[in-house]
Image 1 (spheres, helix red, strand yellow):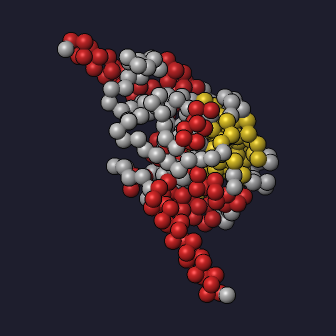
Image 2 (cartoon, helix red, strand yellow):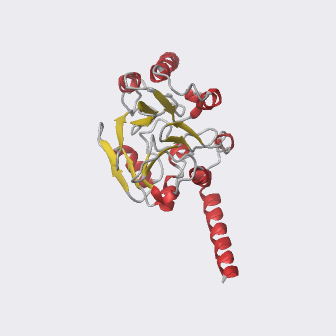
Image 3 (cartoon, helix red, strand yellow):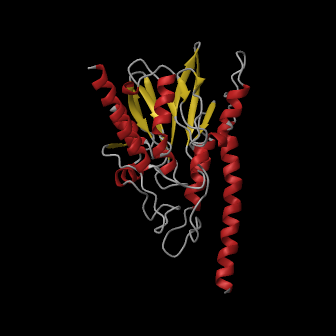
Length: 302
């Protein structure tokens, strides 16, 4: 019987590895992004369980846990291992949230949902992309020649801007932050430690990245999105924000803060974190719009 069990486990492992290999996405940054990272505590019941280049956060509670983001399709076993290394069970994850449905933040969500049985929640636009398994033509990074597909998520709960989702005493609030993608969201909650509670912010990407030929300032087949993106940047800047966690850990120097943390000083605490992220994003967006103006002027001249 033991040999039969071992054989079955081995077969399941092979099937799982085959599925990950089939779903794996290859890109110029994927190998670096997907390097394993040791999980660590951020504050109170908030834990980093992502990879070296892509954030995933576990917020734990007595009646179930919340997982934010899923990195690449091939990141699923790394995230699961990190959750279990910390002593938590995948089956106790009741809610999976997403910042935006690009392959590098939502790729493993379908597998993580299967492993946990959790409800997946996203903005209506993002929810449709998760169901379709690929972004549409309204995404700034849409490229019909190189569309990245992710495993489809069958059931997704759509959430309204400002809505709060609960898992026992956990309260997770969604803030629509379109710009990097049309359906982008930022999530906030409170984590407490030794009777002191902090306003936690999991901030969506604020980078104006696109395929060639797309203009945030508007083009022949799409509207000007610059005002909407600036509104998003301002929104993040004005959130109650004691601890910032960015969708890419490097955007908030998360690993640097982890290394600097001591028993007497939690270096993750920075009430200016969201304002700093937004200020940097604003400067980069100004540069982007200036480049777009120059490109449009050259196109008219020719």
